[in-house]
Image (cartoon, rainbow over all chains, first blue to last red):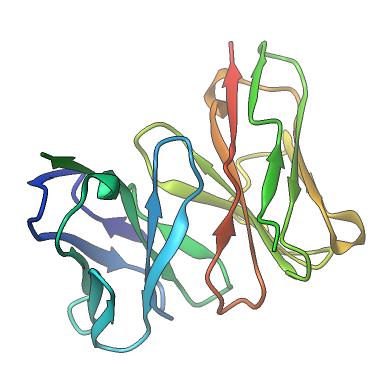
Length: 110
Length: 113
């Protein structure tokens, strides 16, 4: 089967750095994406890694290791508004669907 | 540009009733996807349209679910008859190309009682 594993919850303080890990098991692999969802809102695209290495977008960075079937999202200089759910997602071969994990709920404390 | 819009935002129906959810994708997006999230679990893929054609409907739970995208614009997802386990948030997403990021709507929260 196809699955993505990520922690269910992470808590951190304002100004800190937090890393959300994701491991995946899929039939084929076209890239790892990260989405952010605030309560009651729409998931919104944050980043994409098609190749190994680190991609940086402002305070957010995402890393991929295809040989380890592993990636992470790194959030720096945490702000209260970063409290949200974060989903890793993989586009697998055999079609164009994107498969999502169960999400990591991030709580940022003052 | 206008985002993906979904209607209704909430729906509460009784077991055995019928509900139709609507999704208007971003204009010009050929790819339209339906997903469902049951509380605390993954955002589960249901199906994928390219224009008006069903590209992949491998995630549809059973034949009580019917999705259409007539004319390749908006899409509807009908559940008939609804069962308790159909409760969840139904998300629609669209993308320009199949390699492009997904743009999601705010979802329809369906509660079957």
